[in-house]
Length: 187
Image 1: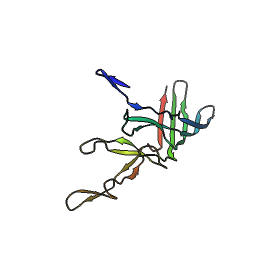
Image 2: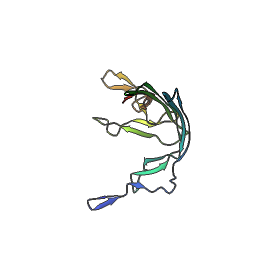
Image 3: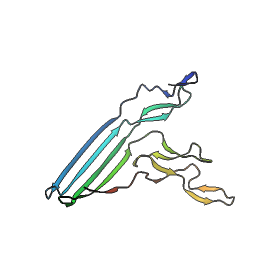
Image 4: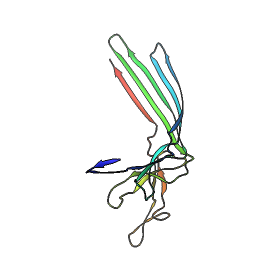
């Protein structure tokens, strides 16, 4: 409930069928050190499956509220590997210089979803009020870009789109590509 200005209104409709999200996760890793701890590192693998994901949908009217929390059908899989390698380049009485690098490779994917379109990534500006460019789609990472394919202007100067103005196409993954980081410390 929200209140203010002497009144109140219901924000979310009740959902007696709501359940807790469920997650099952496997983590495995190995840490190593060689050459009297001058070279060390780690390799970590993770695999997580989440079901009954909670999501706030727009409620169908008429109703007492604009939104309703529901458990989404389907599962989200997150899996990946994290790597780290550290080395002491110089280990002296008055100087210690460490160099390290780490990388992360992760993939998430929605599977088994059979529900209404879940639109995310609202854009704003002249002529695009309420438009979105991201969605949840089976077999893709969360929040992938879905947009129209512009094919040009017609003879009257009006924009034309492949499949019509309402047809949307997968246009890319907003998640970061595998990343590397280099660290250097000295004392």
